[in-house]
Image (cartoon, rainbow over all chains, first blue to last red; front, side):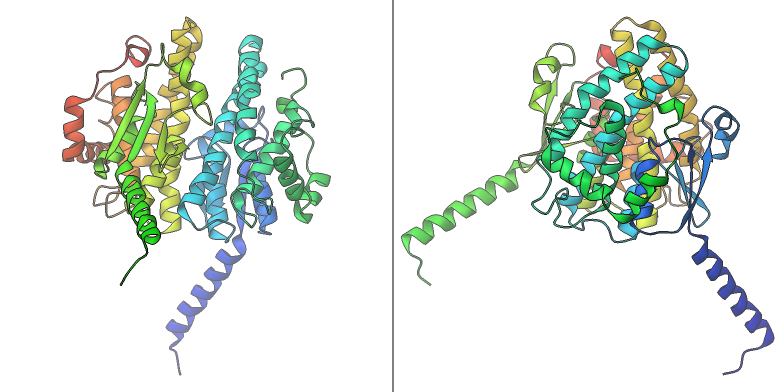
Length: 235
Length: 235
């Protein structure tokens, strides 16, 4: 089969552009915090997806960068050149796209209920940290109290949903287990490493995820807590 | 074909229990507010799903009822006897279960990004209302400012996603359009009915949903705003 030189040129362009898209991978754009970015990082690592990261200093760079984002918030995962916002939405997308999701609607819904409950709590964490940074100690404390009140409720709900095999409502690991473990890691930092003692199944789930080689390796090399999110004295 | 009397009894029991499940429908359990319950109500109505509702007075009944809920929050949709929490999770479940959802993963993800952005803003609304109820006028005002800052950003993102046919990233109406319209209705109450003047496509979407017979009928009969969520003087 013979192609004209024009057709050959177009085919070459298509081939090159597909190569670029394939190699582009994902880019995570987030502040230099764990917080709502860490679940996305853990998931990208467990899925062994190549990605780059832009870390934006929360104090010096964020005010200048905020308007670069369509929703003026981060984390953002850049997917084929498009900004995708919202931790829960990003994690669910990655899990479904890369076959780490339960397919049954009711099962997936019950797993996502847990994720959304963590998202709720992360508001109070964020509000506590911002209030402290702004010198409003009273507001910081009242938000910290909300975290301490809400978290055990969510832990209890996780505990009864962990399957015999050790995952949330699933015989196999899903994106929800990975993202939940990343949140649990944050709350162990905040509230102490004994946090999961009364929740043995949840603790085993946390240890199973942190024992996965890509996560174990990340825990060894990741940046220390930014002083903005250092829980010292707040909780 | 002949059944033994034991078998007949078992078959009768199965038939009766299926009838009960089929007729059980959904029950929405929420405070006597619009807020995070209204998107669920609108969706149940557009889908023409039979449901009952328990309305819990936010001041007098909620403190006594809180512990009845597994996550100690509402809205809850009772599905076949099980509590399902979280507005976004409930709405997505109903949309998928009853075929009012986009099937393509990326499209559905981009629609859900809008929903999650509204969920974010509803935090600031809730915090403003609670702060006012507790007499903390300064905190109420700072949360109200957050609402006014964030909402136009979300509206701009909706505006560029409305399709030629008038729905968010879809040639046909999805659950996201219905839930978004319910949120827009709340923000028109809060920030004034001229809210959508600069967003003609979003305004047309809002009018298309509020013009649907089940929603038009609901707008005629629904309870007035509870004084807790009356925006008067707050925004």
